[in-house]
Each structure stands twice: as structure tokens, then as C-alpha cells.
Image 1: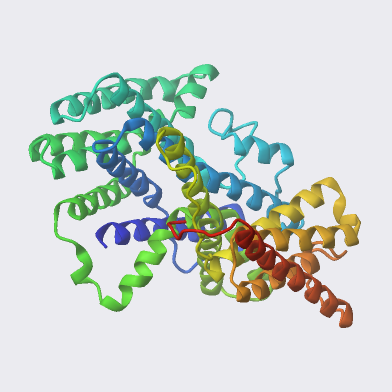
Image 2: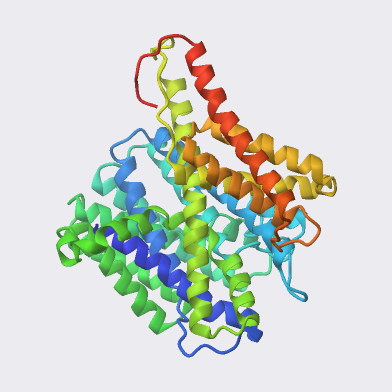
Length: 468
């Protein structure tokens, strides 16, 4: 519970900073905010937490397996977020607002903004932490593979070395105009390495691999480098408080008794979708705020809409992309490593939850519509509708889905067809008998997928029940 609370608080701070400060700075037409949060503390705290858990897991697990797991966790959801956010920005951005080109979206998929920001703009500003995390995780992999650092003194030597290199490079970065150096320095995230050092130091102190005085020295050195780059006393104090909170979460007893039991489930749920919410909230949240502003909503309602966009989008990304992709890729990784796996045993797949199937249908259907839009296929509405029917059947067949999930899948596909295939983009209308027929066909396609799965399962003969 302690770590869930810290993670949720950090993501909410990111949202409040972006929604109350950056969104208004970039789009003054949204109006002034009675209360703003102008300190970028949340993302820095998340990087400290990443450093802590990276050290904790790599210390008790094969380093290569851990590194692949990090890639499987981060990249699929990130790529999905870039595609969805970029597409919706192109379709829903208002007149006069910037919208990414497909070249910009492709550059963001490759994380090129850090290397050449003047050429490759962000589709979503929140993405800046991804290459920093990947560079830090890769550096940890190299260190562990080259020479074990699991003992405290060896790890401390590496941490002091990272801080020394960052300290030496920063004056050069601040005073040089040589583009190749800037590209390597910013692209590899050297200017944020101290945040990972802070997280690893917390882990080493919490596990008594270094003393508390030594850990305090590492922490003060990391905070000094933070101040050296940003030169803000208030920001330094806030990040110091965040680091202290991370220390308390690592050292002390769990915080479950300090929170009402009625909040435990909500906190755990929010923590579980925190990465998806981080990816989905900013650009799409600004669009939500703009539409609410046009409808006459005040700043409080706009901010609530901004946060709600992040939570809903984060839930969709988590359920539809992050968790399924992570499980599938990890299973593939483990199968390749395990040469003695039983090949002939069949298992009965447990039906997926209805919410998960609907979320997959929403994300996948949006991606299908986006591909049809780019290729020009949406101009042929009959073929577009047939494609969505096939998609509905595939989703319920592959899930596998329960019968009631077919209704949700059909409804999602109809909304996508009505909102993005018919001529007026973003407007959902009702065409009487025609839409009744469309819903019926989509429902039939979804039920067909469920039935096909049942037939295929029985055709394979007697099955033994096992884990999905």
C-alpha cells in the first residue's frame, strides 16, 4: 500500500502540473486558473521510484530477464499511446491548434524528440521520461553483466561514478553549442541520471547494504545536481520531500493502517493503471479541456475532465495493451528459455473478463478505423462496416469472451462506425432501422466469434484444465 500511495500521488502531481500550468501556458484561451501547481515534481518522483524498484528486482533476478521484462512493460503501451494520441489529435484538434503529421507520429514511435527536438516535436510532452528510463535500465543491465554490483560497496562505487560523470558533463552541456554532444547528452538522459541514483541509494540503505550516513551523502549529492540544473529553491525542497517520502515507504511499516480500508481498493486500482494514465493524460486531456471550455465549463470542471481523461485513457491502455502484451511477451520469453516445456498438454483458456474484452475492442477498433482512415478505406462505408464486423468476431474468438461481452463489443464497434466512418467525424447519430440492422449484424458477428471458439475447442478433443 505504501508504494501504491506514492505512485498514485506522483502521477496526480504530474496531472495537476500539466493541467493547471502547462496547458494554460500553451493555450491561454482556456482561461486563468484560480489555483496552479507550477513545480514538475511528479515525474522526478516517478524516476526515483523506478530506480528503487530496478535495483530491488535486478538484485534477485537474472539481469537479462529483468531487462526484457522492462521493455515488455513499457514499449507496447507507449507505442499504442503514440498512435492513439496522434490520431485523435489529428481528428479532434480545433482550428488553429497544432496537430502532428504522420511523420511526427513515426518519429515519436522511435523516441527521436530527445535527440533532435527542433525537428521532431512531441506528440505528448509526458513521453520525455521513456528514453531516460530505457537508458538507465540498459546501463544497469550492462553494469550487472560486466561485473556484479549486488554487494553494497561495489554498487556505491558505481553510483558515485555516475554522479561524477553527470556533474562533469553538465557545464559542458550548458555552455556548448556543439550539436553532436547535445544529442548524445540529452538523448541518453544524462541530465536525469541523479534521479535513478537517488532511487538506488534508497534501496541500498533500506536493505542495509550501505550505511545511512553513506546513503545520506549520496542523496545530498543527487539533490545538489538537481539544484544545479534547475536552480529553484522551492522545487529543490519539494523534490527533497518526495525523496524523504520514498525513504519512508522503503524503510518503515506499510501504510495500510494509516488509510481507511474503504480507500485501499481504489488506491490499488489507480496504482495499477498509473503508467497508462501517465501516457494518456496530457494531449488528450488538453483537447477535453478545450471542448469543455467551448461548452462553457469553468476551470474546475475543465481540470476534472483533464484528470478523468487520463484515468479513463490509462485504464484502456492498461487493460487492452499493457497487461496483455506484457503477459504474452513474457510467456514467449520464458518458453524460449525453458527447453523442457510440455508441448502436448492442452489447456482450457479461462474466458476473459467482460471489461477487458470491451477495452480491447475499443482500442483495437480505434486502431482499425485509424488504419482505414489513413488508407482511404473509410470512403467505402460498406467495406469499412464489414471490416468492423470481422474485427468484432476476431476479438470475441481470441479473447475468449463470455456471451454478455458480445453486446459491449457490438456497441463499441457501432460507436466507432457512427463516429468516425460516416461523413461527419466525431458526430454520433442514429439512423433508425439502418442502425438497428448495423447493431444486429455487429452483435451477430461477435456471437459468431464466441461460437467459433467453442466449436474449435471441442474439435480438439478432450482437454485437461490448466492455467491460461
